[in-house]
Length: 289
Length: 222
Image (cartoon, rainbow over all chains, first blue to last red; front, top):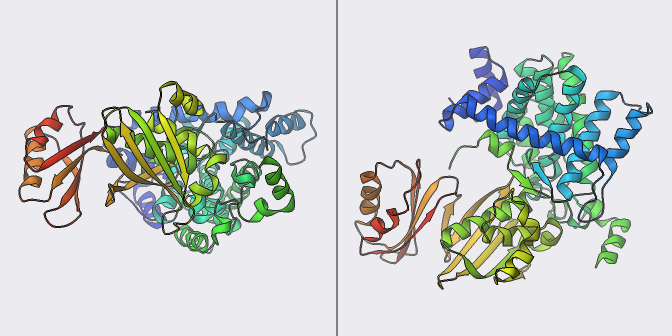
């Protein structure tokens, strides 16, 4: 059993009466001649690393190697704990945790690329926030991770997840689409609603360039992980409310890929354009050199 | 090529900060280390494209050096690879090539010399999400990812070599997943890359070497 397109995956879900996470687990077992026990164990290990990297900086601020970021997760966490938050607990936690993972990453700590290191905060940020707020057991979260990986797989199969090839939309955009789909399944959405949520994110983040200041995976990357996490929640909320998307996921993936490949090289991880070329960033660059 | 796994999407578990510039880079060099089949005494890395432009900020240099020292992507020693290389007496150099632009955005050439004076020249590309592939061996275009157990056979392009390789594996009951031949020209040097479903025993190299046209065999178990 295999699928290359979202539509094939959704047809399989319909035919078998299964969720995306279940179909993805079946595919993994068949394609790689392994067992559900083995892949679940491996995914639990990934989830442990994700949780650790999402939580640890909320109490212990970590300074990045490039020195551009550090301490943001702690600030956000304290802001929420003091009752000053304005976006509600789920959103607040999602952006806190997603930024936390980037602090760990930027300090050469251990993270799980999801699907890349620069976008590693989005999926754990959204899932950990949902887990805490809705008391979702780890087993269900693991399912969420399989669902997320189905969307990431489709992006890798049919488009790209490399910022150097497709810009930030391919990294944060895909991570956010993954998180949106996983959140939708975890909160009771159908497979087609999951795909709609993923499609929504790709649409909303279409064209986002990759323009890291000083060429470091720090700034604006960390901010964009928070943005990706919140976009995922927006899209999941829309999908769960019954809003359908006109453009299917397969078409949005192709669209994102086409846009990405046409981005000038300055906007694809080369630190030669966008935020990286603002006067402030350039001053920083001169100082560093 | 091989199918994409959920752990290619949610993974690798890695030392940051960049999957393409840190983890992918260390994977290329790790593959090169495996291909060299022994410890390296000197190495030169030539960086192209985005690697050339942004290597320092992504720790690409530390990752490449860590990989050629035999460190995997989640090995915390990558942070200290420069010091570890110096301690081990490994000479290393980084060359930035921004003139050559007709390459994949994240490309590196590795020129490595082992302690027993074997020379290895490979080009690797980091293709996103920590994945990579080797695209040149000694200037011959190849395609190799290290995701399977593999034997890279360096041979003279003559009749019977492929049969010999296939028979040698068949005799050990090893199933071939992929097999590809790349050659410089007819009857010139060729590379056969055999990827197998099960691990390759250490002594299989000697068995493959028995054919008169086989010059070298690199066994890559990742």
